[in-house]
Image (cartoon, rainbow, N blue to C red; front, side):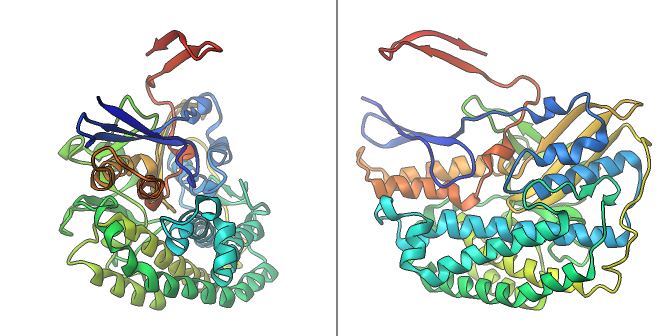
Amino acid sequence: MSQTITIDPVTRLEGHGKITIQLNGQGGVEDAHFHVTQVRGFERFAQGRPFYEMPSLMARICGICPVSHLIASAKACEAIMSVRIPHTAAQLRRMLNLAQMVQSHALSFFYLASPDLLLGMESDPASRHIFGVVSAKPELGRAGIALRRFGQHIIELLGDKRIHPGWVVPGGVTEPLSPAKRDEILAMIPEAYANVKLALAAYKQIADSFKPEIEVFANFPSLFMGLINEDESVEFTDGTLRLIDAKGNIVDDGITASRFTEVIGEAVEAYSYTKFAYYKPLGYPEGSYRVGPLARLNIAKTMGTPLADKELAEFKQLAEGPVQGSFYYHHARLVDMLYGIEKIEQILSDPLILDTHVRATAGVNRLEGAGQAEAPRGTLMHNYKVDENGLITWANLVIATGQNNNAMNKGVLQAARHYIKDGKFSEGILNRIEAVVRTFDPCLSCSTHAFGQMPLDVTLISADGEIVDRVMR
């Protein structure tokens, strides 16, 4: 008899998802899927709204990475306006985006992943959480909390709110940076350096003990995509996209936001409300790729800051060519964070950082615009169409989690087939299968949007548990 194992919900994720594992009659794994079970419709909500409202509206998609949506949305609006924002506004946005990256990565590494890494995959589930980490490793627990506070406080200083700041607008930002706020941010940086260095040292001490997991946690050849500058340094806010193959060869380069939809398609599977992005010339699923911290480090030749460059050089020693194992997303996040702190310090030394010219203004000059940025989890693209009055007629969002969706599903299947034999499994094995998904740090709230007709399954169940009626679309 076949059997289905269901992990519902998948814990320590941002959003709601489940895993189903289908066993055959011999107790081997036949198939496995990661299901995103929630659905939201921001593309539909946006229709009829003035385009200049889009950044603030789109920021409401997510409370963890609202800044990414603010920036990608504002860039799409600026394409409609045909404006170039002032230099100081661009620098301030870059700092805001990096602060969000630091706080989001701190959440992922310390709050969601570190209970597995520091306490063990087989540790007691009752204490396998951030409070258990703080109890067992108080110095690291405090470092994680402080790094998240560092990023959030910078967002609050710049945008007046930690969550959903309205500071980023089409054309730039609403107000300049004051000397007092600049000095307050600079004063926070030494502690941030100490905390991220502590985390890197702790990770490197334990990484070798996870070699069995590294081998089967979504470890396979794939394409990788991320933003990069002309000097081949990592980029989060500007630059263009580069796509490389599993050997590090460039597949496509210089992909601007306006080209994104020409080369990237989106497929739909019946088992998930999150789409599956792919590189069109290779088709689906062969053209599936990975984004996020692992992809960024695989693509970049340099981080562009001295401390992070040393860490990047060490990271690249993990493999000949791109690092394929998704377990190393954890390592890459820490390098990202170190870079973010260094880059924020560099930005604050810009002699024009206190300039008061921080916004350009214009009306509708084009009827379509697209904007892209690197969210903590990877590439994010917003694409809008408007009418002559500037009202949104169509919108599409391509989210990092959708771009990693195929890799997450392949990773769940790879781990399930490795760990489950003869139909036997333990809580620790199921936790490892969940942990595959956590390496990608998916944001499920971000990833589910209405585009075309979404699959729908409505089931009416009686008080006795019997199915009374079912409607499927």
